[in-house]
Length: 250
Image 1 (cartoon, rainbow, N blue to C red):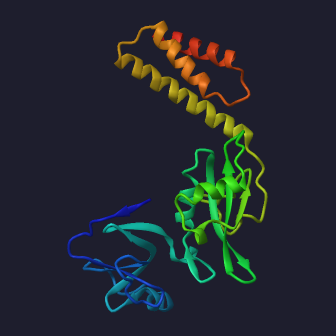
Image 2: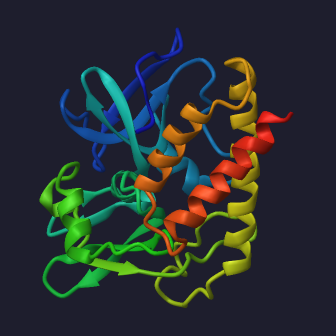
Image 3: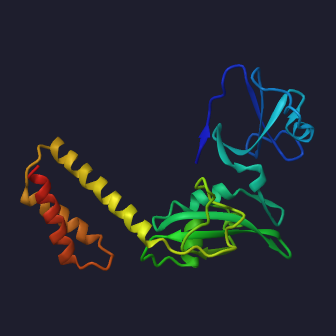
């Protein structure tokens, strides 16, 4: 979670609810800020000025909650989901989803519900070969979220639509299918492999380098023990031995 504990000297902040009333010490709300660097209007934009500025205070549009005297960022005001009258901030749910080791990307949006008003809906991209289920995802999220924040609709998708600058296009999420980018994933895997090989070489230099068969066997056994992919254990062993031996020659 993104958060902070210190406010710049000379400035004041408050958390306020959507009506503008200050929240209690354990609540959540929009961050209002006041200080010498806060202007009093948007030039030539009266509607935005009336919405964002009031009596020397500026409404940032950022939603926070308090946690042990620390302010935790929840998301933007415009992304708030109201599920059966309860507030759900998409970013908080997305960060909880991304804690799962099988998840590579996630987006949470509000979807209309006939009786609840809205319901949080998650669109999730898993790692190749993952066997994660909807029930498993919900069970995992119960460790981090209150029940009303857990998405009632969970979709596993190939990818998430993005804008030209690379941000997730929330308005398009769930409205069109993304074609899997296997070539892109392969390239990212190759880049990551090169990075890890170079990192291993640097670490070997730090510990004196050389080819220690005992140490190599330990590393191979550990790697094979975590092998859940389609490549056989014997192939994994041969590959790791080759890489380590080549690094030992540098």
